[in-house]
Length: 254
Image (cartoon, rainbow, N blue to C red; front, side, top):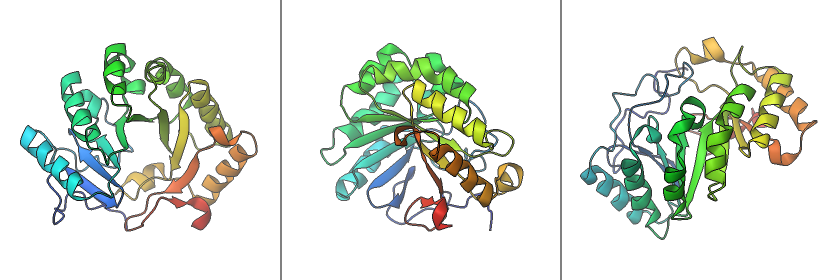
C-alpha cells in the first residue's frame, strides 16, 4: 500500500541518533539537510523533508560518528537529505572528513542532483577537497539524455580528481519510459563518464506511482531492449526498492 513515508523515515528508530538512517547492515544514510536544488515531483522524500530530523550541529554529527564506530559492519556512508551540496564547502567537508577519518569506512557517498540542477556548484576547488581522502564517490540523479549532457562538465571535474561518478535514474512515465529514450540516456551517461548504476521503479510513495509509475512488463521490456544494444559497462540494474526488503530487488524477481 502506498504511503507518504513508505520507509518509515519519520518514525524514530531505537538506538539510531536523529538524522541517521539504517536499513542495511553495511551502510547508513545521513540526513545532512532538508534543502534541495529543485523540487523533483517524483521525490521519495517530498512529504517528509522539513519534518524529518537532520544533522545540523557538531553534537548531532558526533552522535552519528559514534554510532558508526559502535557498528563496525558499517563501511559505506551516504550523505543525503535533501542535497548535501546545497551546503557550503566547509559544511560538506565537515561531514566528509568526519566519516572518512574512520578506518572502517571505505566509501563516503555524495548523493546529489547538483551536476544537473546547478553544475557550477561542483567547482574544481570542491572536487579537489572531496578527493583528498580517497574515499568519496559521487552518486548523481539523472533521468534523461539531456540531463546527462548538462551534467557532463561537473562530472568531469570529479572524475579528473579520481572520484567515481555513478547515476541513479527513476523510470518515469512520460519522461524516459520508452526503449529509445532509456537507451539514449544510458549512452549519454557513458559519454559523460557517469556510470549507470540503478534504474528504479517509482517508490511506493502516495501519489507517485499513480502519476509516474511504469507497468512492470513495460519496465522489463525496456531493460531487455537496452541489454541487447549496449555493453555491461553502460547497463544499469533495473530494480525496485521495496519496504522491508533486505536488498534492491531486480525486476526479474518481481
